[in-house]
Image (cartoon, rainbow, N blue to C red; front, top):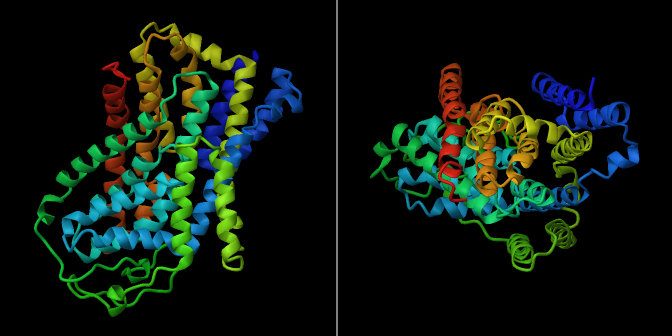
Length: 444
């Protein structure tokens, strides 16, 4: 059997096993890279390790370390509280505030599931308290996470831009970011109209709304917080909900640090991984005892996932599999159809597996036909990025599961079916819409 076929079968096996068993896809990919690379492709282990994405791994460690510190010292909560105050008591604005807060968190480096885990309990608590459709609120949180998820200093954005640059394709990080952001905002508008947002317009509460997950009517699964107290009515707020909270020196320094990372990485083009680790370490020096556990909060599972998958993608390239698949796809002779098929592959697989992993594979598979110049590379990259992430609304994905777990005052079976129905619509229509918006017009 040819190396190309062996590597394709191995890739299918990786996604299949990771979809049905709780095994990190990156670990499976490392095993496949070692076995397939040495036994079928004829690579030495030293040669395989040249495909290890060291720069990206440093970036992932630095960004998630910095965000762990921001979460531990209350800076994330400060951002949430500040955003919530902006609604001025208008209930209709709350879903959009939740969208914006989650987008901000992912844009500054939070992993999408981490941001959803923080905001979903708060958002769904609001939904139960103020009679907001929980499907509207939950999906606004997930789409917010995806909307901010492709900023040039985010995990998704860094991953995509690194792959694009390594493959020598036309790179436009800002276009990828804004394309995903506005696409998800547009979905948010549709959600707001369809799922009851209009009936919220004009409604106002008399006091500042609460922001803490521990005020929810049911326990949430974020791993912290004591059992909640008794539920309150829509216009009753506890004293501790409205009590002013002092901004600490740690929080001020963290906000300055986040801005510093953005400026040094985006304006001065310094390596974001080293900059993030440097800023995080400086912040840790000011409160070493408090942040001693931050290193353990680095998303090592995501680091393993991305490093393993991209190492196996290197083996695919060395085996000639990328060119093999690319030539087969190009053989269809219709670049627009090829792009559409890749969008659907990304969307369908991502609904059950890792979005981060499938983005890397999908872009790698698209490289040969994008290099032909028959179709705009930036538009296809944006479409693939959007198609592979908007399906995270599925209850089978981490983000969707977090929303389902934190829903309050609902029939959970019925809510699950509602989420499943919405996810089905997104899986069917999302890749097509992304293709129509970003690829067909040929403006990118």
